[in-house]
Amino acid sequence: MHQDIILHHFEESPFSEKVRVALGFKGLPWRSVRISRIMPRPDLMPLTGGYRRTPVMQIGADVYCDTQIILRELEHRFPEPTLLPGGNDGLTWALSHWTDRAFFQSTVNLVFGTQGPRVPQDFIDDRSRLRGAPFDIEAMRNAAPHMRDQFRAYLAWIDAQLADGRPWLFGDALSIADIHAYMNLWYIRSNLTEQERLSAGLEQIVDAMPAVLAWEARIRAIGHGRRTEMTSAEALAVGTQAEPLTPVLADMRDPNGRKPGHRVAVTPDDYGKVPVEGEIVSLSAHHIAIRRIDPVAGATVVHFPRVGFIVTDR
View 1 (cartoon, rainbow, N blue to C red):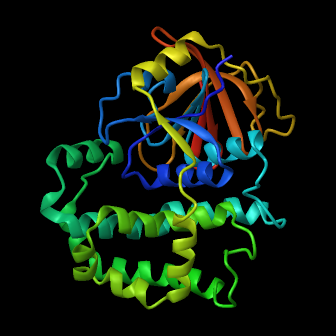
View 2 (view 1 turned 90 degrees about the horizontal axis):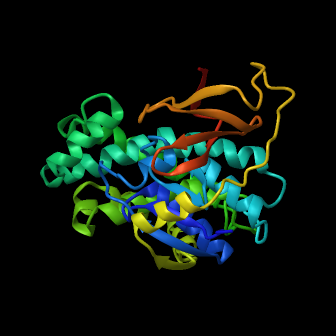
C-alpha cells in the first residue's frame, strides 16, 4: 500500500505554497513532482481526469484537487499539530474565499501588470485558455493603481488583526487562516524582483506595516517539511499500480439527493472549467469524491471541495 504524499506543483505557484507551508508546519515527508507552468501535462491528466489547476495532491490512487480539499485531507490524516486551533474551524475555511479570489485577483494583476513584457507569450496563451478570456497584460498594467489600493487595504486588515501583538491571526497558534492570507504576500515576494516591487510601490506598502512583516517572517521560517523529488512518470506509475482507498460515504442530507453510485461531473466555477466525470464514492457538505477508470491510470478516486465547484448529473 503506497501512502506517500505526492504533490504535483510548480515553484512559482502561490496555491502550491499554501500546501508546502502546511507540510512544513506538520513536519511531514513528501514527494515533489514539479510540473510545467503550462499545458501539456501528459502524466498528470490521466490521474485527474482533465483537471488542470495547480496543485494536485496524490496518495496512491486517491487524487486531491484544489488546496481546500488538500489541506482538509492533510488535517484529517495528520491532526497534530493542528491547523485548526481555538474553535475557529468555520471562519478559517471561509477566509479562503476572500484570500483565493478577491485578494488573489489584486495580487495576480499586480504581479503580471508589473512584469509586463517579460511574461512569455506561451504563458499568456495558456492562461487565456485556462480563463476562457484574454489574459490581458496591458489591462492589468492599466489597473495597477486600483489594484494597489486593494492590495494595501487587504494587508491593512491583516495588520489590524495583528495590532494587539498576537503572533498569528487567531491568537497564539498558527491556523490555516494564516496560510491562506500569507499566500498573496509570498506571491508578490517570489515573483517580482525587489526593484520591481519598489517601482510598483509594493515594497513601500508592506514596509509601512511592521506587524505584517514580522508575521510574514514567522511563516516563512516554517519551511516546507522533508521534500524529495520524483518524476511525473514515477507518480503516474504509483497511481497505476495502486487501488483507491476512499471508503463509501453517503450524505443523507445532500440537498440534491445525490448518493454514492450516481454519475456526475465536477467543474470549477471560476476558471479552468474542465469537467471531470465519474461515479460518486463519497460526499458531504465539504467534499465530493468520484471514481473514474482511465485507460492509462486505471481506477482513481478524484476528490474535490464543494465550495467553488459545480456538480452536475450525468
